[in-house]
Length: 160
Image (cartoon, rainbow, N blue to C red; front, side, top):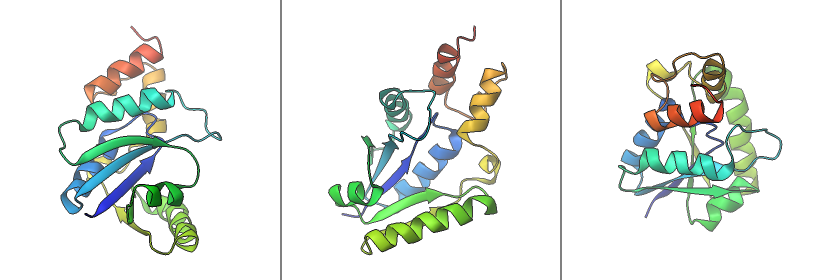
């Protein structure tokens, strides 16, 4: 069974993230969307909230699971008996950082490959950071996130 891990903070999950998940699900027997606990970031949503939002968004995809992890990604990937890390690339500006991560992960465990997937061009500008900023300023984020994520953002930010 070919298992891929799609890691990220998903704070919050966007339609761009979902597009990458759907593309990966066509290529692998199982995709695990792994929500990362990152102590260097100050997420809007807790780890369990982010995981629940992801889970609800992918429930219709039969071979996609959700999980959470902390620590080294390659150790998590190996623990799930996966062989591939899926990373989304929106623009050239993402490439340098993602390339460095992929090379470091390869150095840590050469059995694990990283593949880069691009979302639809309509999502190339989209990021969780931008979505949170639009929501904080009272803007409509419905074109950028699933409906349940929009509801969670409004509740978390106390927007009527």
